[in-house]
Length: 383
Image 1 (cartoon, rainbow, N blue to C red):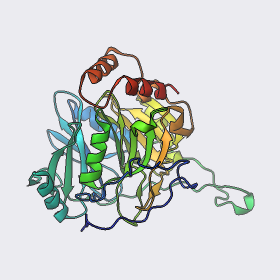
Image 2 (image 1 turned 180 degrees about the vertical axis):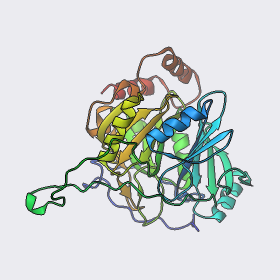
Image 3 (image 1 turned 30 degrees about the horizontal axis):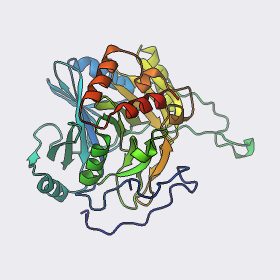
């Protein structure tokens, strides 16, 4: 059981060659709550509605997911590793993101979270069962915390290719050619979700306080660091057990909701061959292949038939609870160590009446978007 009153852990200096050139300045956001209500263990699944479950299932299989269960009104998709299903797609009149579900570390955490928020623990009666507490984050996104959901057994995993590196004297593959098949990248598991919020700071603090998440990296706008970060890459706090560099990422923006979700595959060849498989079937490629800076993942981004963005990734960073946040300026060119420039499709900067209306609406509302912030975001995405 997590102890919210436990003493703070010693942290490693984030800017001494570990993962960021910069650490926090005095008085900046610490990247964690001192006494969180609970500490979630992982991201369990994401939930969507779509009008065509057949089309959604076809794309999911082409992307590398498999069907765990299907009813007339819902589709449950899974990766190959042991764990709960990782996507729930419900039949609905339109395509929309509902929200994420996080995995509580133990049953008592649900009771503690319910007491702290004034909500109830309820029994889940659909596929997988379990119990849940349903919340709303400050952006208005439904967030579910679950425990006791039935786990899917592991399936045989796609094996990383054996690579020859260096001299022939140390070759690992001899008298054997390398021929990775052009087939769907086998998704091993759901890695993370990225959300946009007009109330970024409030939403960030809510996730740190209620779910015990901790920040791996902050990004800030050029010339506006004194106003605080505008993006955070956030991981689960599993103590000394390493966790993904980010399970949740959030950024300030005029839109609210889903940006993309990411799914782990075996290696670069699985990612690239799977991408060619998707390309041959006419799916829209958004950006890649490249390697990120924050998180280090090798990435490749695709759009499903409903225009939702999904990422294949491999070789991501994992951090334990001792590493403190890194700080870096936000820019489009700073998203990757190598690879093609980030596309307008990926950045969401393609001009359209919808994006203009979102920006105007955000400026009129009581939120964290003002003219300086909006201009700073536009400048960052153009750099």
